[in-house]
Length: 369
Ligand SMILES: Cc1ncc(COP(=O)(O)O)c(C=O)c1O
Image (cartoon, rainbow, N blue to C red; front, side, top):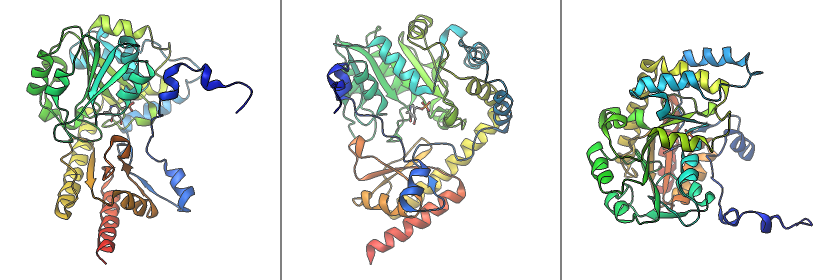
């Protein structure tokens, strides 16, 4: 330790925080294993990349990065407001939807306040609540995989400021339909902010419908992202749709230029190419269903997923993770979610999925030797 004990000087919650563990980067695995190439199936990215129109917009924007971006994201906000039948004051932009979630929690919850989330819900809610100095209230899933909406409503107290629901959920892949969500919302006090995190919305448009205009609660916030279906994870851009006063309050916490120029232009172009995006979503769902069918046949399917990832369940999950990594395939272990016998595997391209299935087949047959 140096001459100053910095841990003593940090805010108290800093010492309790455990940093978010992202999927292992390809470069790290290559260096660890001395491999020449590898496939990353650990971060629910889109294997097909963004729309060619978005790529053109990114290239064009590259020549303008000596200028600050529009801090208000005016053009993009207008496009999103029109898309959702809202006004620009209802739209909040962020550096990934992750930032939107953190800003919302920081705006509405502090020391002494409670933030409710599902125990195996997206881990960022717990981290953001902790970082804000608020108390996180994890609610166990009744079946181990889906949010127990009744138990979550029962957990609401006078101190509850925010409730977070991921629908579909990452990492469990579970989904609740609009009627179940509305029944849940009807049980909540009007002053509770409810974040409906719909990062995987484009994969469930048929099952969910228009949640933005179909669900109702005064504190409802619907968050979406360009990272998954739109294939723009590296740009970092996401948004939320909510009450104008909620958006205006959160904007006070936002840094002035939180969404960079390239991300804004790429998102605008991607919105102009919805057909391309939805065709890739259909490809991904077809591949997901193929993987799930195969996993089911092997008796290792961890549950039905509505996202762009599948769940593998096996009592040798840790060993399987190592063996896949040895073969240059990076899945995501779910130990941090209390699911040590699960691996979450993002749906890759057809070729990547073939490679995964072959690798798993050889791993499972080696277990029988
Ligand atoms: C449920 C959920 N919400 C939010 C995010 C954050 O995505 P981003 O910050 O890239 O928009 C993710 C990313 O994996 C997610 O799975």
